[in-house]
Length: 268
Image (cartoon, rainbow, N blue to C red; front, side, top):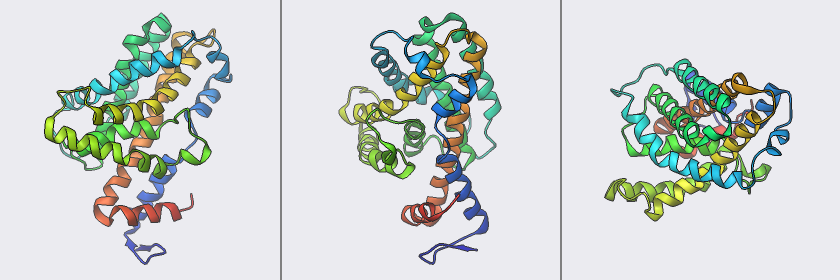
């Protein structure tokens, strides 16, 4: 048994899982990983993007989030715990990225919703593999949260991007959206509680998406790099999803406050 500072006992397996979760949730930013991959600063690509590109990406992202998760869950078949198919989703998104890289920025309205849906499907698959019922509204909203953990808002500073800080910032919006959807369903996409949640998540996710697009805009990268960057993009969110749903699984067993306290005290 492992014991935290409050005297709460965790099984050795659960303690090791919490360590694993923290290592995945506090890993290097996607910006750094992409720069390592392409060997160039992402700023090079930003200069090549059309004016107001951030706004366009944010609009497409919001639409993709409204539609993507429900479709992703519907295509997954029966519930039940089983291993996640990370390689399959990586293969699919690499193909999507390669096609988008070949066509160029004009493919964005099609490629971005597709890649977002594939990422959400992989996230839901990982949630299921950690024992969560992906048909539950709470779990579906947790899948959406992963996209917020994977990127920063343009307003963030270094102290505002930690896992628990982002969860706290989203908590009220998640709760309000859950209450609204439970009562009235998803028929009204323009419902204020749902719009607030999607906007909060999209504001963070679209920053990462824009970085990915900027990287593919760098000259001479082409379709191969587009596929590679999409692969890296998927891997980044798969790692975050694994960490998040390990934490959520442990919360069911030990309680949110105990798990959060133990997480913060862990050194990795």
